[in-house]
Image (cartoon, rainbow, N blue to C red; front, side):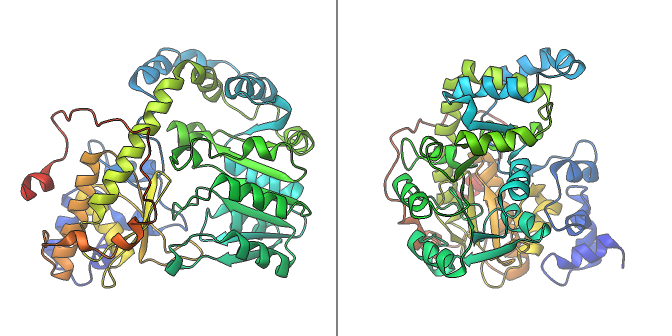
Length: 443
């Protein structure tokens, strides 16, 4: 059996040869590429496999869909020749500019080629023997220290609690294990849970005797639970606290690879001295200089994404048997109905609907029954829900449009975030060309 046929068998179990051929014909994507690594296939991997003209809707990579604006991309395009042709400024100069734009003290900032580069240097320079981390969370917080022989004390988050982290229980766990470094991701990936700023500050103060307390805020800009959710200003005046930020996620520019950390000058300086002098590229430098001129557009993008998150949550709840966990990130964690397979659904959506998703079977603390779905505009969400209902009907005999689907088990989690933000703006009027098949059918 060739790779394609083997992959097709995964899509819902037993399929006919005609169904295998149809799986390829509908998008032209050979889904065997999804089975070749521990992490998700990149967008470029899928695009190359699909060939020219194939459309892929990305619900896998957590990226801001509203920023940069088309006008900003036009500006980048006009200057692309000089951006690519000449050396960037050194990292200290770019970091100083970023600190000026964000209102930060430059001695408290270290900027790197993505937050994962900072995680690597933090592990090498500041983690001496052990690190505590709740799971599930961003995989580099467990993988990186394990790769360098550190002890990783994993604190399992419980599905029955909606994967919410109880900081008091976590502190007790850290004390019992005598962990020397503690990590919290806020907002956490993949479950989207958010912890109030006051609780994180208390957590940092309770552990002021540790070697390091790390708060990864890569997704915190997407939260609308508080007006000022970040503990960055609090971390820089504490002896052992570090806050990480990922600009690529916030600004919708993963390909540039840039992020930064905040801490007191002693810690930030130690990391900055180890980073290469030209560790940031010219495109990153250009974007840093553009930020201050497009602050209003960035804030608008966050408001639109906040509205999309609520709309998407309501639409996902219409899928019978799907559990949708509340989120303050730009993604949702969902648990699939018992009879569904996350691997099969992922492959089916790519092969039949051109939709790329994140199945969580390779995340510590998760299984293949869980998927992380990135927040996208309403037309894309229609396409996703249509694809999931199509999978349900074709392989599990459920009607695509069952009645009373809003009474899904997901509703028990929706009550966790009752407060409505005051910074929402209405959707712009929908134009033509959007995916409207399911809404038209329901109407």
